[in-house]
Structures are given as C-alpha cells and as structure tokens.
Length: 341
Ligand code: AMP
Image 1 (cartoon, rainbow, N blue to C red):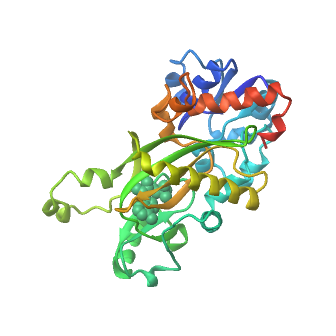
Image 2 (cartoon, rainbow, N blue to C red):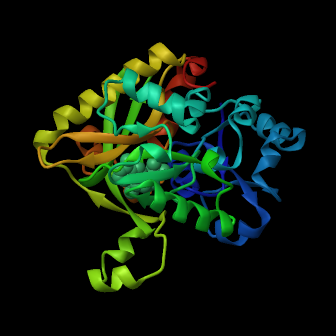
C-alpha cells in the first residue's frame, strides 16, 4: 500500500499530515470549490478534483485511487453524503470496517450495538406521544446536530417539528429519533483499537461547541425566553478536555466492551478509531448517547498529540498519524487484509 486518500473535509488535513509523516503519498479527493483552501498545504501530494464527493463511486475516481494503491480513510463527510450501501460498494480498500458504518448511521442498529456493549444509554422513545420529560429530537445519520431540538411534551414537539418542516430542514417525524435528554458534562471519548496489536488505546477527549445551544447559555434567562428560535446543536468547533484520572478505568472498560460487542455483531469488528459520546453525571457515571465508528473531527485538536497519546507514544501522535502507522505496520507484515475492508 503506498498511498493514503481521504475526502477534503472534516479531518482531511490531520489525516493527510499524519500519512505524510509516516512516509505515504497523500491524495485528496477535493471538491473544486475547495481546491484553493487545500492547495495551501504542502503535505498533500495529489488532488483528485470532483464536483461532488459522490464521484468516489465512479470508475474514473476509483481507477485513479487504485492506480495509486490507495487506502481511503473514512470520516463523517463520507457518512453524511453517501448511503451505507454506497459506502459498502466502494471498491477501493477502506481503512477499518466499512460494514460498521451502517451501524453508526441507522439509529436502531446503533442502539443495539450500544446495548450489546453494556453501555448506559438514554431511553429512546417510540414516538412523540411518549414524551414526558426533557427529550431531544435528533436526525438520522451524521447530521452534525443540525435540526435537532428539545421538547418536554408532545405539543411542544409538534410545534417545533412543524417549524423545521416549514423551513425545509426535515420532512417529518420519519426524520427524527427521540431520546431522553441526558444531563451532565459532555465528553467525547476518542479511542483507537489496533487489530494488529489487539490493544485499545485511549487517545483523547474533547467537547463540542454547538450552535445555537452553546451561544444561548451566554445570554440571561429572560432574554432566552424572548428569543424566537429553535436552537440546534450544529457543531462549530471542538475544545480540549482532560478527565479526572479516577474516571480512566471506566473509560477503558467502556471502550473494551464496545470493541468486544462489535466483534460479536459486525465482523470483522471495530478496527481503528472510534468515539463514545455522552455526558458524565454528578457521580462520575457516563451515559453514552452516541458513537462514531470512525475518526471524529474532535481529534483535530491533537495534531501534535494529546495528553493521553503522549503517555503512550514518545513522539507527536495524532489520530491521523496513528492510522497511517497501523497501515504501515500491517503492510510490512503483509497483513493489510486484517485492517481494511
Ligand atoms: P449527535 O448527533 O447524537 O452526536 O448529537 C449532537 C449533539 O446533540 C451532541 O453533541 C449533544 O450536544 C446533543 N445530544 C445528542 N443526544 C443527546 C442526549 N441524549 N442528551 C443530551 N444531549 C444530547
């Protein structure tokens, strides 16, 4: 394997910088409108310019990737812009387990994997009639929090849903998944599972800064009431976090249970980066409301390594670089089939 490719968005810079540091040729599948941005970075060796990322499915694009012996690193943009079947049909080798991405996109499958992992999860609701306490309505797939809203009863839900339908953000109930709102300190736990070493590495934690919800907290309650807005949870950026050391044991145990459950439910299991997303309550117990079965953009914080990766590696180790290291190690042992699908 001699090149690493990804789509120009999400965490492409970090991924390709890491790939370059590990000695790979780097390829960016880049929308023409973003070419000027990405040309600024010298570590990108080759551009495949497209009008839409969906061209990855076309013969021309996959031909170029195959000529370069490329591995694609999947990230949130791939999931947001393509259906699970389309991702599964990509001929170029994909790092990790492409089959598990379906389990990330489908809310019911997602819940099943979290239950199998014995994670504490918020209750999901059958429909708006079941709303009795603070509830979050979330869209399916990797919507990034856009169009999410809160409701405490059915009437409020209907009012907000109808407003979003009028604005063209959702089509109706079928686009929404209802979950109990979990109160606490949010934390996004970033892991890497090495299929080669059969070892889980805890890589870092971040918090997300989400608009409008985080901005609303900056204005007094009186003004909040007067604002006629359905605040969404659209991610704008990420900030770093370190955890109380006493929480780490549970962090590893949750990650390991997730890896074991994935191995049982979706062969070949959870290989590479993933993230458990949730909140800590007053007793330091974590409620997981989501997972991402691939690299998350919160790892962009740690291009030079994180407070946790620095405990494992004596060199700056970003998640992007860790992925490239895994590919390099697998290739040197003729074991690539173990880490790509
Ligand atoms: P998600 O797409 O599930 O990652 O959700 C986007 C954002 O919505 C998260 O980063 C949280 O801020 C918020 N969120 C999602 N689900 C819950 C939940 N059950 N309880 C509290 N906040 C949530």
